[in-house]
Amino acid sequence: MIDLWKKTEQGIRRTKDAWLGRMSRLFEGEALEQEAWEELEEALIAADVGLDTTQKLLTQVKEKARRQALTNTSQLRQTLMTEMISILQVDGQRAASTPSGLAVILVVGVNGVGKTTSIAKLAYALRQEGKGVIIAAGDTFRAAAIDQLKVWGQRLGVTVIANRPGADPGAVVFDAITAAKARGADVLIVDTAGRLHTKYHLMEELKKIQRVVTRAEASCQGLLVLDATTGQNGLIQARHFAETVGIDGIFLAKLDGTAKGGIVLAICDQLNIPILYIGTGEGVEDMAPFDAQRFVEVLFS
Amino acid sequence: MLVGLQGSGKTTTAAKLALHLKQKGQRPFMVATDVRRPAAIAQLTTLGQQIDIPVYGEGNSPQVIAKGALKRAKEWGAHWVIVDTGGRLHIDEPLMSELSELKKELRPNDVLLVADAMTGQDAVRAAEEFQAKVGLTGLILTKLDGDARGGAALSIRSVTGVPIKFIGTGEKTDSLEPFYPDRLASRILGMGDVLTLIEKAEATMDAKRAQELEEKMRRATFDLEDFLEQLRQVKKMGSLTQWLDMLPGFSSLTRRIPQEAFDDKAMKKVEAIILSMTPRERHMPQIIDGSRRRRIARGSGTTPQDINQLLNQFRQAQKLMKDLSRGRQRGLLSLFR
Image (tube, rainbow over all chains, first blue to last red; front, side):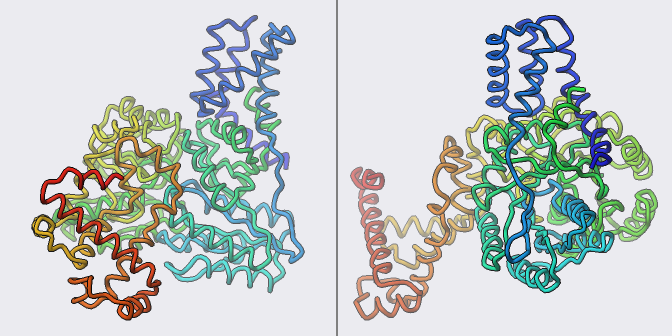
């Protein structure tokens, strides 16, 4: 796990340079002047944290600073870090096994966030833990989506259950559950077609897939893949998907760029959905479990 | 040449652009150079088959593919060569220089940055880097069919200084529209997009047929057959939710109304009922008695109550039209009661 974090740190460092490096510098002076507060606010907003959560964070830090008579900038910095960590620490669990022995992870998200690549990473990590993994190719809509998943399956040595393009995703999932049970697999990861959260019929289709899973008496965990470069729309996406299928956790992908991924603070704060994993590259090893403490520490280091 | 971050929609946009050109009578040719993402070339090939446009993707490096593609495209007599490239991060030095090498090889007329409308504040930085390292001539903004306002477009446009040429508004290959700044401005400000709505109405409504209908309405000879026709034309314009989104002040409202309220099912039901009637019944609904009602209900999978409801609605609509044609203001008011 430590090795994974090392790799990840490189990714997050770049994020830091872009975002909190600027904030760190703000803390180098002696006392935080009004101007500095404003600059801090600007930095948080530019990181896609969003207005509401930024205001909340700053109010809390200011309040604590006043009550505990903190004037020293390093104390204020510590306070801000603590506040950010407490927002990011949402209680969540990774896929748990059920009596039937099969845990199903339903991977959802809008188009182009990196669902398929994230699934490959997740399957690889679970395999490393010694779990039996099967993948269901539930994206029967996008051209060559099934082929893409099959290539990953071959590389990882993971079975991919697929049907022909255009087939009913519910049927694919049904077949995959049957196969997973027959082979005694521990986890079934279900890929789904990217869909905009505003498309009613596509969101209904997700509900149907979920019904197929619950009828088969397998536990169903909703994993939302979110692109770290997404802006405030990410919050709306998370809300819609959570209302439709229930989201138990978020996979924050593409954190290796300069994108700040600040939207996760807004999501944790307002929707109380835990960030479970972060993705930081195109390779299967470029993933790590999310650690709020570590995440914030690396950002500030 | 299409460039951009991973997942911004380059491959889908390549196919949309090719189809757009083909519909204008041009001969487009597509090239797949994304050798890294699994099945990326297969994706473009599949799309090419769907819209009947050739795709070239032979070779193990983007440059090799590009060289072969240009040769093949010339032989084939292509007017346009659309080159899809692999998604990459703007800070990935090796991949960015691969892109500028590819550009040297292709010497493209246009280098278009494909950007996701849902992108956040970081869009500016990415666009800046693509502009500095590769050089851009235009932008295509994708996924505008969601509820993202596309405000990042403003930033991207201003840092790159190049125009937005097209916007992507759906997953299908025909969902590409030329860009109109005033419409996006309205959208960013939440003022709706009335112009697009009007254009859609004009494109789907048959002008001659509309005139006929109007005539019938005025003479109050409007029957269920015409009613069905009108329904179908409305349906062609897309879902009611889509409509409302384009109306000023409605975009925030539609999110609060339960989606079921806009269910197309109600419309399908009406269609099924009318289609289960004989032409005579459609023309003279007053002849529909209990036995006919039961037959229609069985035929359309509905209940006699549903049919009563539809007939009542139709009678009211007919009465309203009569009133309107006589110029009674009262009729108009009853519409809003």
